[in-house]
Structures are given as C-alpha cells and as structure tokens.
Image (tube, protein in one colour):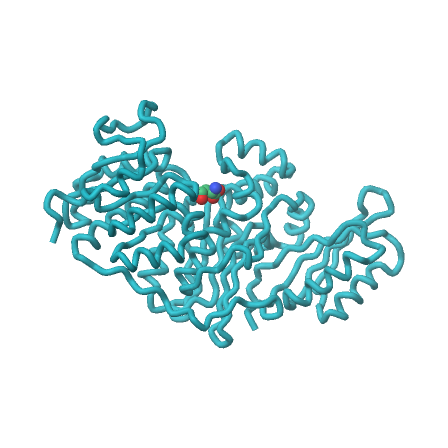
Length: 438
Ligand code: HSE
C-alpha cells in the first residue's frame, strides 16, 4: 500500500554525497519507484549556505538552512542525514526519530558514539534507522549481514575499512616511498579526512567495526575498550620485511566471537596479511570485508569504500528500503539478545605476532630476547636481522607462533626495560587467523 502523494524525502546536508544522492534519485526515479512499490518526492534539503553553487538543481523553495525544520516537518517521512559531525547531527536525528520519521544516515561516528541511544529511541517511536552507507561505502555489507546471512552466527569478521590508509600502504609498498611522502599526495587528492587522525590513527575504521559488531552480535562495543592503532608507525622497512616473509601490511579491523565462552573482541590494528589471502590483494582506496558465518562459511565483499557515487548508491538503497517499510507499516526489528556477551580480555585473545626490535649488536642479545619470550610462553617462528645504520645497532624482526595478547603484553613490558633495546618494540599482528578467542 503506497502513501498517497508519495513518500516525502528530506535530505539534511547537501555536500558531495548529498548532491550525489539527489542526482541519482532524480535520474533513476521511475525505476526506483518500481522497486519501492510507490512514488516518492524529493521534497526538501537543508544546506549550510543557501546561495552556494551546486551540481544539482533544487528549487529555492525546497531549500532551507535550518536542518531542524526538516526533522520536525510533519510532511517529511524519511530524513536522510548526510551532514556529518556528531553534535548537530545527533540533535536532528533525535528530533526526527521522536517524530516517528525513518532516518537514513551515513554517519558512522554518530552511530558509534550514540547508536545505543538512537536505536532505543527509534524503537520507542516505531521509527527505523537505516545505515548502509556508514560502513564501507558502496559495499552492501549491512544488508549482507542483516538479510543475506541472517541464519548465521559470526565467529570471525575482518576487513580493510579505511580506503585512505589502504591507499597509503599500497603506494609505500609499490613505490618504496615513505609514509610522509605518500600522505602528502593523499592530502592533495582529497582522500584524507579534515580531521586526519580519523583516518591515520584508525578511528574511522574503528567506528565502522563497532557498527559491524553491533549488527553481527547485538552489542555496542565502547571505542575505549577496543585496541585501536593506525598506520603512522608502520615504516617502509616493515613493509619490506613483511614482503620478505610473504605478507602485505593492511590496516585491519577484526571482530571475533567465541560462542562457547560468550566473548566478543574487536580491534583495529595494522596487520600482516598473507599475500595469498584475498584481502592481501585488495589495494589502493578499495575496502574489503571477509565474513565467516557458521552455516555459510566465508564470503568476501570488495568495493569502493568512499566517494560520491559509491556512498550515494548505499544511501539510495536505504531510502528505497525505508520507503517500502513505511508503505507496509513494518515495525522496527528487535536487537539481538547480547545480555550474556562479555568483552574478551587480553588473556582470551590468541594471535601470532611480528615484533621489530632495535637492539645493540653484541653477543647474547638475541638469546636474551628469546629467553624473555620463552619465559612468557611465546614460541618464536622466525628471526631476521639486519645492521642498522652502522652505529653498533641491529634491527631484529621476529615472528611468533600463536600466543595470547596478555603474554605478548607481558613480554613487551619486559623488553621495554631491557638495556640492549634502544627503542620500544614495535608489534604487528599476523592475520593468519589460526587465533581464536579462548
Ligand atoms: N575516510 C574514509 C576512508 C572514507 O578513507 O575510507 C569515509 O568513510
């Protein structure tokens, strides 16, 4: 049953993505209406500057510089929140949900920080939140987890969720240039977020991992409880060591669930990915996600994680779903029951590691390092060594067999105090996925 006059859409935030959404909705309106099963109207848009030049033509009477007026407009059915940031976006989203409107959002930071509150508010008001564009842009991972894989439990999900970091790491590897040199290019190409830390320190990927973890396991994992590291400390030398060992370095989000012990674990950290694994060959700005379902097995999704058209594609898919849902009067789904689900502790998480040490090049040092690792129950898998700058120093790279995060943390604490180390140890996890929660 379609709404008389059509479903009315208000877009809040008409930047690059907003203009893409408007453009593609207009261009494909007749076929999209067939999918939706009813008419829709691009009714209103909120912008920051009313007289700014835009790539889409919007009647002046449809424009406002007051987003709240759209959130509170009783004529609007779907509020499409594309303004970014969390303060104003939170107020606008809450107002729309309180008014019973369906919200479509691409705002991962908003969901990560306020998702629990927003989804509860949506349920109280019989409203829906759609958020396909918040994770991995054009890859329909939300739909895959929520619909296509609905029968599965997910012991393992991992992914490359930040295109900017993947671009930088790929070019460092291919061209042998430093992080700083490639970062400068990425800035010029407009790939890096205005707040660079979001990309480079792993926070953008962490926001996305939190949303995936919620979908897969029903639990909002607090960011401060997640190990989150970026790529600033990954050197060209690490990339070259990794290549020698048969790996690529990728910024990897990891979500592990142990169904037996009721643990969940999520992290974002640079990791060594085997060169023969699919994700080891996902390069440049592309994103990729591997999902292991207990019934379906592994499936891998690759695509553009950002950009006007990829993100608009995801937003429009949500708008069409939202329109169908509104027309059929479907109630919001209940969250998964995660009451007994605990966050895994470092002693529950098993990984294998790459450890780079800068040490004094003198007899016995390697044996001392190996001794510390052995005392913490860590077994070495391989050792590489290279002189470091002729100063009587050497770079030592070890890879380990699987051990717990807790054991490695204890070993690192001891190594940091060791007189033969002239810098703190640098660790990378190895994505061989022999590890599990225990
Ligand atoms: N800054 C993000 C990335 C794009 O580089 O992947 C938006 O999520």
